Image (cartoon, rainbow, N blue to C red):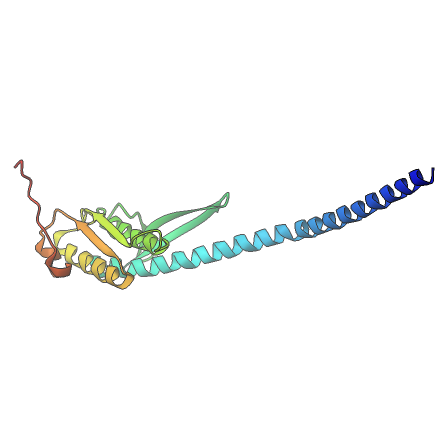
Length: 195
């Protein structure tokens, strides 16, 4: 009987200790849960602030490129919205305080410059150990007037050098336009063998 009582006392003590440990663990979980909403909200706010700062840099840099290439007093602007944890961006041009669609009014030339700039920006965010800094631009000058193409090529060349990118540009424009910016005279004219 004494052995049975000792065993029951030991079992009770073990269960009490287990209960104390479980209670302590639950308090720790409750403490975590009490701050988790605040931490989540703070992280979301920090993420949104960082996103808006980055978007501001994109607006600034691409405005400079647009003004240099198109020689017009326009600014790239972006409306950012956050829904269900995801960002969406609507780019537009601002001219003298008026809003313009990027594909209308400029015949797509703004879209050419915007596309190049966003691609370069995207490449800068990739881990260099996993991705080569190589950019292919296939007819990114298609909506530019021929007299504006050299300005785009110069900006692509300068940005590529500054960012350490190797850039391959494919175009239907005259290869001489690219010659002065090509590394080691690497501007080629490919002819259609079927013509």
